[in-house]
Image (cartoon, rainbow, N blue to C red):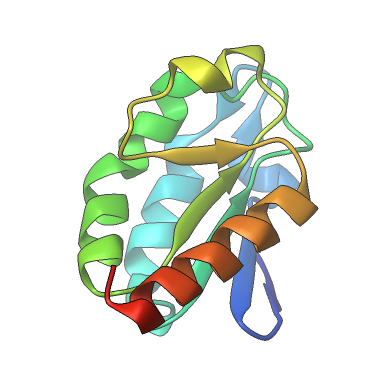
Length: 116
């Protein structure tokens, strides 16, 4: 897993060893879960933009941890190039560009500051 820390978010991206031709492997999911305590207090962007085979099925693996993360008062955004982003459940925020991900985090930070 590649980790890039910025203020006010951290980008997590699967290593090529954790992705196969079908998309994300369970190795990345397991690595993410194993290391989640290191990121639980940070706004997160999971960057799957280099892997067009990663779709809803793979992203849904993260659904429970995504909900837990948001309840902890932090943002959890998926960066993905898949076409069916609009079909994702409401509890999952997926965008196509890093700028959109940054904008989502900024808006959510403002909402939390205002108590919305």
